[in-house]
Image (cartoon, rainbow, N blue to C red; front, top):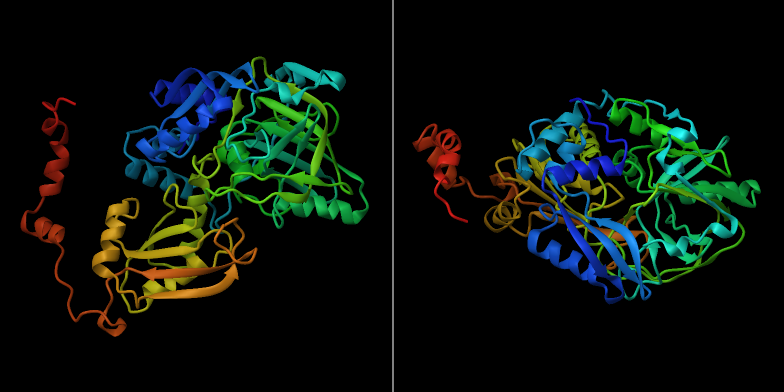
Length: 491
């Protein structure tokens, strides 16, 4: 696979547009939450993996029409991810493109399951589009840009698709996607959650005696930087930008900030520079969280005084409708997870997290012995981050097809073939948790149960198996003639 390195989100969006995957809308009134309502209806009608990206030219905010554009729903479609990661033969088939991009990325992992690293390369400010406009001092008014208040119950407008850069010569670095509440012309919140790498790094600086931390927020960087900042590609203190270079197959161009030594992606739409006080805190939120529920207001949270803003001419604003749209490239995380679990579960054949179903994981195995389904499911459930409901199916079940998974539950599963794990570690903001950081989990073994597991002595043959056996080559013949069957179809 030769990764197609999109240097900027603009290059990527142009490619989506050429594929007919970008919806252009002239204007929307966000004072009436028109963009938010549209995002919900779009996902309801097309689903999380088929809905197109959309771009709104002008947005009404606080009674004023502001120039955008504002873009949303850029990620989540598997053919789009295949485009992003350099797959050349792209078709509008979610299943084929999922397998193509995951297989291609699996080949880029080394024997230990680690991504290749290529350090970034620093470029001059004259070569950095993010430096086209410079604002300092009283020129800065972060409120003047088209950041959205996505939900009426949110505390305000948010920058929620920015990569927050924290770099320290002794403690290491972190690039993480942490929401930033717009608090004033020259002040934003910075919200790494407890336990996240940014939170750990800021608290280490505080314990060391630092009074402030230099921080930069790259808003709408190139897609692979945003991917690295939104997932766990890098370990604590590791440089995410080296992993970005590995995914690109070439060094990421970076440029030095105006008021600190942090290097940021040169093709970002905005760079917001500032200082985070380490001994002062402010309330933050509430905010609509990733599970689709309103999160609580926080009484004490990090915030940042803005010291400089640089941006492209006519900058683009990206917005996440958290809990609705899938707003990051997910293929590297899926490939890495599959590799890691495959080492623990040799007969693992598939790993899938359904769009819009946070906390649910479906895996498939080539089951040969009793107990393998439950064992595989418990390995996956041990992940503290997200895996709350783990469904295990046989490898003849299409894990990307909700109907096929539900059919396996209805026809192959007995409720006794499940195990509940009480009060184990769970890091994500699941609103059903009675206690923070803890959650029960369940493993559902929907594989065909063997007699030793309480299953029938003999399972009846599946209808499809009998078709393939009784009519050899029939499915290949159907595939060969597929376009002919539809030649007279009038949509």
